[in-house]
Image (cartoon, rainbow, N blue to C red; front, top):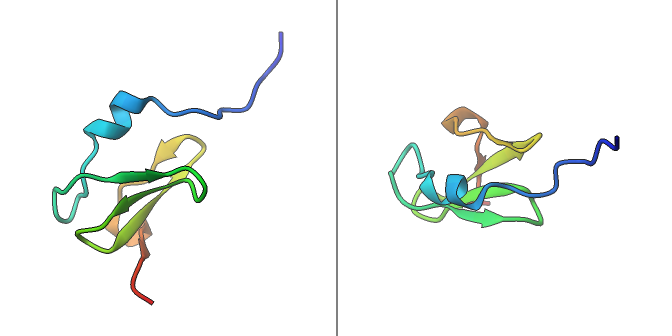
Length: 63
């Protein structure tokens, strides 16, 4: 038995998630492993295959 790393995400689950701040749709960024809210200018991290949907954990897209 081989333990393969988690490389994919459940597409339906990702499509069901919305930004906790604006309720707007999120866009998956596979390169950065983030869910991006263009409306809130925030990126929510995905750690170990689990989206972290906490505003305090989100990265600001405004530089």
